[in-house]
Length: 173
Image (cartoon, rainbow, N blue to C red; front, side):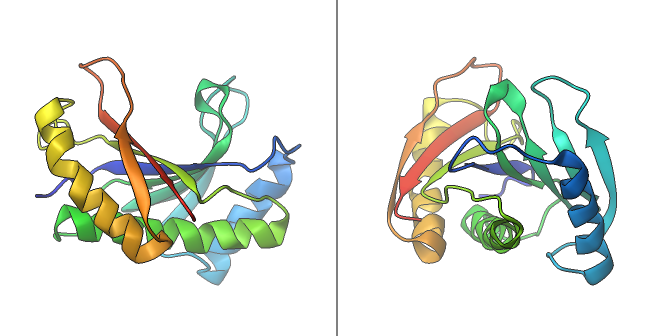
């Protein structure tokens, strides 16, 4: 099973006061130093949008965001294009990448909670928001998370059936 577009979001451990200008500069530094995985192209500033995407580190196939959607601040990894591997491997790579970037944020003074993750599958053609798709996804996500972050439980986030399939992962981090 493949799902080419998905996101992984870790919440912040605390509700930090975030200096978005400093984060913008940090993301530019990540591009210059090739600090995180992916072909990174630019930094987009959406801090003027209330409860929006915040600061985006835009890449060819991936993005990293300080995200404030739904007034839930967190660190977001976005997979925009296929890796041409199975879903379990794509999620595993995504977790490895967001963990690496999150550790750099920790060095910067922002701490994310890797024991809680929300994974949203934005590829509704391959993974519609149905009970059947969730049943197929659970063992794949659980295995990918176990390989990277340790054992975890995977539960479905109830949302509008027209929206993307979203799961909540709770584990040891």
